[in-house]
Image (cartoon, rainbow, N blue to C red; front, side, top):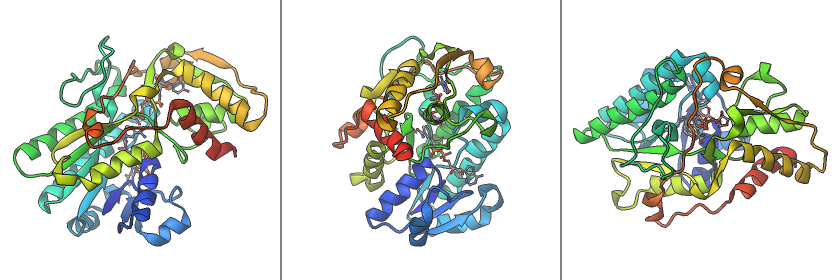
Length: 331
Ligand code: NAD
Ligand code: UGA
């Protein structure tokens, strides 16, 4: 099985899981830090930038039974700073992978995002793959370039499916968290990872946890082992049930506001480390925190009926998911 983006957060967990289940894995990524030497000994790994290795990648796809594409810029601060890089990697390079899968008749599992749903439009209904409209903001809020690129890729893949040219499964993950998530920072000069890593970094260094636009936005955080169980069901694809399907992976029971996430992480930090928390929780505007062009997804809850019908149910609740994720760094 070929995993593009094998060195990332989700990729590194997937590779470990596949090895435990006896699969042969070929991985590609610009980075291998999250894989570790023991894992690297057991897979064929190529430290490549996808942009510079098209013919090598065509060769690897032609000899794979299944292709999983995770490569992306997946971090809102990059959407604001480098929107063109986001489209270059997340749309054009991923499209090249899809077109190569068409050429060699390979099943593609393409990672998209819950961000394609955009804003809730005031509805509190879970986001359903086939029913929910996709509501993105105006062009001047260029944060939406990520969701737009992912959505256009989904639409092209779907059209190739309709033409009978491509077998695919599109995954829409909802805020997975766990060990090896993004990277920790000492201060903002070292980058802006996603919220769990930012809050944990702040707790470790006694700096503020910033609540963007009051922290009333809501997310459904999903523990990585639950996500991996779902993904393995999709990879096994019994009776072809996930052929030409879009599938949410998320935990609707873990929906919470970002303000509550901050409070929970402060509490768990004190409990796990046994130290006093030196960080304060401070409000900040989206523009001050990310720069001009930021607009937020207000709320997103996954409809997970497709996976439930296959016997999957997420079982790690929010506090436990945070505890396990934080223990990885604090123990
Ligand atoms: P990640 O950043 O950890 O993984 C992406 C990987 O792609 C990284 O290892 C990176 O090095 C690699 N990559 C980027 N550009 C590359 C290039 N030019 N050549 C080769 N490799 C390159 O992010 P993740 O959280 O593991 O996300 C994986 C996928 O899932 C992405 O497509 C992301 O959009 C999607 N996704 C993730 C989440 C989540 O909850 N983590 C949610 C929604 C969507
Ligand atoms: C991200 C990325 O767009 C994608 O990787 C992915 O599609 C999605 O997560 C996901 O993981 O499902 P988002 O949830 O907005 O989207 O990214 P985070 O950086 O984790 O932010 C979550 C929320 O916390 C946002 O409302 C953000 O404004 C807020 N936030 C972030 C803070 O309040 N303070 C911070 O320090 C950082």
